[in-house]
Every structure is written in structure tokens, then in C-alpha cells.
Image (cartoon, rainbow, N blue to C red; front, side):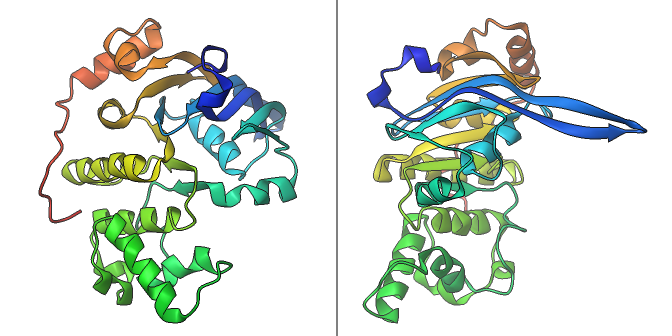
Length: 278
């Protein structure tokens, strides 16, 4: 939802006027591609904001800027009431633990040489624990939060299904108790029934931990299930935004109307309460 329509105290993350261009070479010519063109974003506390659009819409570039993996050419960022210098590595490092990410591919986001305990221990390396047993118990609690048993700590990523790997990735992302979780196409690589289980998990974690979530997707089925608010991107701009039900049920912009029309031709999945794969 637009930053001007939400009280500042209700927003955990606000971006204003974000611009980002990339130079690409085409033959002998250097062209400038405007990936983001004056994008505003507001994420409400303990809410889920869906960012949707087709490939090339700018949503992945926006995610990288939120996570500090890239810097904008122009724009402002407010996080938890404070303005953030997006060009300062020191400042970005200071909020890194508060903004964590779950990537699209659970098959490549986990180091295959590490067991689950090592994977969960990695983000906790600067957190003091009384003993290794205390650290082990903490990691077991993280697994419990995502619906996995403690005996998974001794196993390696290749021993799990895709849905289970994504649960491990989520456990690692919440290890430092972040305020914001960025889900960058976090369910799109999973089977449809497994997607439903992971979405149910994210909704549960939002409630239990008070997480605010930026949920980036190109399909609408997942967005309809989990998102409170939606912003639609096309060509590096926000073309429509508002409450999820309003935007997806009565879209005003022709681009959004087309996305919704295409999605209605696909039977949406239902949440599956008992899926052993996930």
C-alpha cells in the first residue's frame, strides 16, 4: 500500500521514489535499462505484502535493494522508524539481522556439505550460547517451529524433499528473530500441494513471531492465500496497489486485469492439511 495512506507507526518498512538503472551492451551500443522507476513500497507491521508482476517487471531488483544486495540510484528507505542510508555498508550491516530472505530454489540455497545443525548454526555464529548443547537445543526449537523433528539436525540437504529443504531454509532465515522476511519466489519451485503447506507455515510464523513479510511472486494463487496487501509491478513501476481482496477481485489497471484473467484460467490449489512431503 502507498506510503501516504498508512500511518508511519504502522509501517515497518517504507521505500520512497526508488530508481535503479542498469547498463547493458547491445552490439556496439551501451543501453540503459530502467529497472525501477520511482517505486514506493510500504510494508505494514505483522502483515504480508505481495509484490507481483511478470519477469522483467522489476520485482527482483526491488527485493535485492530491500535485502541490501544492491543499491538504488535514488530514493529513500525507512526501517522501523529510522531512515536508512542504503549506500552505507555499515548501516546496512547493522540491520542485516532484522531483514532475512528465503530464496526460490531450496536445492541450491543450502550448502550440500553441511548438515542441518551446521546450516542453522551459521547465522548464529556471533550469538553467545552457554554450551554446544544449548546451541543444539536452540536449533532443534527452530526446526520445531517449521514442523521438522530434531533428528533432522544430523542429516544433509540431499536427504530431504524439496518442501522439507525449504522449511530448513525458513528455519535458518528466522534464526536471528528478524522483523522482516523477504520471500523471493519462495514457493514457485515447489509442487503445488507442497506450496500450500509452505504457505500455511509462513502464515503460522507470521502469527507466532509477529513477522512482516514481503512476498514476491509472479503467480496469483499463492498471493491470494497469504497476502494482506498487494502491489502490482510492470516495467519498473507500481501500476496498482491496495488490499489483496480489492486488487485481485476488482482490479482497476488493465495490466492487473490481464494477470487476474490469466490466473482465473488455472484452478487454484487448496491448502492441504496433511502433506507428508512438506
